[in-house]
Length: 366
Image 1: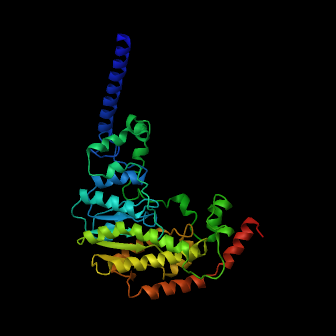
Image 2: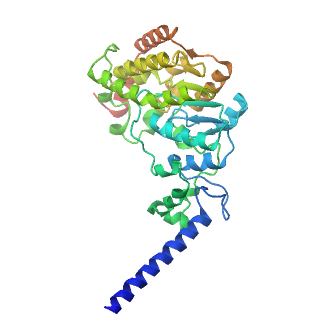
Image 3: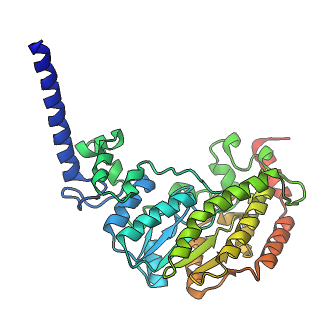
């Protein structure tokens, strides 16, 4: 019996020693820079933006934030700082839902008490479920941050076998997705065809298009999607109404006119329109909110400006900043109806037939 007790005791002691040693290594290396700046490596940020946002907000001096989905990921915080006279950080991430935006901004508020401006993308179809891998990074407790390093994902970083936790070196471009390979899709519809991995996965295959007359109407799907979006918007509205000293700049992303002929495109138009109207009505008495729309630009009619039906080139991100500075392209309750009436006319006038023919010819379809 004594042998078994000694064996178990040894196992316990070895386990405690291992945990203690690993904990010490985790503290010393601290790849997310949650406790201190790195001792042995240059600053770098985890490739998962939902994780590395904690590193940025914890270590960078800022007074303004860019946050939202891929629609703002190519926005340079350095350029924003120059144009808007602030100290911006970009904390965007792909398909970032409004509940996640609220989580990140509350964390930012705890680390910086002097935030003066926040730029947020307004995507109608929102992700209501948080995809933040380690939510404890963003709670109010500092003590449990170190426990994140005991997750298998960080083991290789701690022992030095991987650089995944330091992958993004440049703070200004760490959120950018428009790299050299993605840029090949710019320049026109032929570029979309050439860069598509295969026809069935492409966003423009024929059975994903609706080339009939554009007649957006309410149905069960649009009502359900609007109610979901409306619920998600509560996260942003709470922040706006409880932060009167912060200026919120809300960007409604300008999708290409082609996008509205994609499958469910008519429903998307309805949900976007209804969601924007609801939001404008909710913030009409909030002087700290401005909403911007860019769908009336000829830019959105030119496929060459897009890598796919919704994602635009960096020049549009830069235009957002200029519009905020000049306070142009504003969307209000007063101009809402005329804005979306014109958008509907522009979509109806967009000729899809040439694109259909190109698709058929490129893929040899009948």
